[in-house]
Image (cartoon, rainbow, N blue to C red; front, side):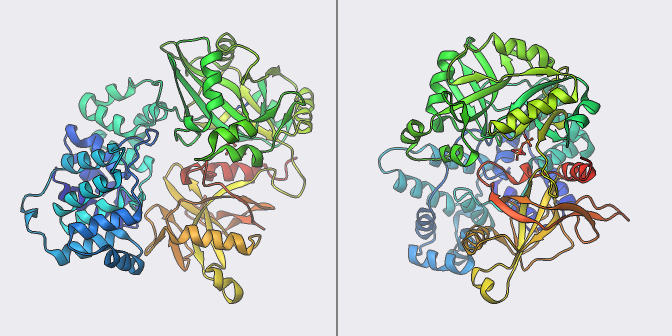
Length: 578
Ligand code: ATP
């Protein structure tokens, strides 16, 4: 396929504000795509050259990209930056200067392969003179592109592709293109949950059909999508619903999936990002304590003092998520990883084994007494014992418990009643916070106007429809400093129209790309005709009463990891039932 034709699709995708049209355009594109290019195109659609978990350093600074545009189109860096100030988007600058320059050699438009390979070469350029070499590669490439292609291409190294296409939407489109209907997405989901790699799934679907995709197994080095918890309000409800459970502490740190292959250790966060370099002490411990050739473990890492048996609060542990000063911080605030599951061992995928069996395998896989600590667990059948264990967890400064069905397999990417979190309920408030995505803001009056925001329009994620739906407007609880912070972050991702995956009746002053996740506490969940969360024909939606901001969660959560509509409805049903 010509890169120009792909860019025409990018252009259509950017300007649609309907998710159904998004799927239609994408599936049209996929139908035209040969097997040799499908993997690359799937990655490019997400502004990447590889799956999310592979760190390819394609990032270029704004100034470097500006210089490349200037060199390509006979302009100056100053002029490019001035236009950038005006448009707020380097893509538009490249498009405009490309038109002005009237390139002559685009009579021979380049293939997707050539653009992809040049971007890969840019990413692989290292060592002395990197900036200049990358700049030259990019400007040579820009000279071969038409205006629309230039616009979309320069956004890739800047990490700002603006297409807003979620993984479920890509899966819907792949299913429409190859399996006849988007409802067949569920046939691809198992493989997606096991491999987290849309490019691999697409390539396999093109080359080996659906049977090939279904055979895709867990691979050491590629993160498995994490199993998550449902909520229940009390020990009684847990026993009523689950009968017999395996009870574990709910540690409040980072989810870390540990992969070991021979001597190579890699670690992934809950949102599938590689974080190996951040935790040198865990790497060392994994080499020493894991008694197997290849393994995938699921764990929660946090700062813990074994002498006083003190678990440090999340605010402390979170200081370890950093890019610089890693060794120094590891010395000050060493982590322990509490291992609570094993998903793969010595060539064998263990996802379908029941939890009881996995826990047995786990106990013979890691050597005791070290930085890796096997989580304590206990089988419980009555509410009284469960209540005592909950009190014990709280008194140790933990959030509560995670209770799990002993017979359940590991459901990658699932959130259901196989795993349930149990926290202490404080009366009058919801026992748990809600993770919301900022969808836009409504400009304020008076003093607030200085910070550019009067209220935030926030939503949750509907994972069935791959849509963001509104639950609240938040105007209180933010300090001036926080407003400034919101404004700074939001203005980088401002949009001039409603994004296709947002479903809202409220029109904010400014739409933003659904990206910033905030933790919100509310008194209650109520029904509301105005909000679109859980709204169906004739039935009102759900909304938050007295919402207030607790923290920014953007570092460890993607927008799609926000609270889902089904969780919200479950919380609504459970409130007041204590
Ligand atoms: P929260 O925002 O309340 O931390 P969450 O949305 O991040 O929750 P949940 O599904 O609510 O995720 O809770 C599951 C999380 O709890 C896991 O992702 C994991 O990081 C953490 N956790 C701590 N201890 C355990 C355990 N023993 N078993 C499973 N998960 C655990």
